[in-house]
View (tube, rainbow, N blue to C red):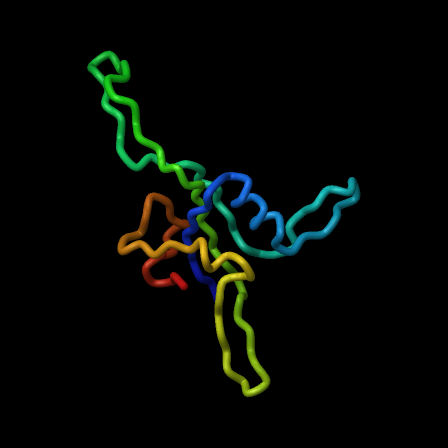
Length: 120
């Protein structure tokens, strides 16, 4: 089962620390490589107000960027079953407090997978 979530972190470092804490293994060169099947897109500081440009393409008004670092994740197989057989799906540890809830699809999508229909 897949779920889509959108996150806002206070900084790039904070976002990357959450990403880097997801399961990984060492490759033959000793580098960490993900061992999970999640798809992560680092959007960075997104544009919240478009800039303005003249006919020559010169900037008249600079775009306004979010002061938050944005990450979209397509989570795969987060289901957990308790001893009574109840299935739950939740954000990985430490991610939930950074989740945002949009009333639209947002500025990024995962190849036709609807955020609204698959969000946690």
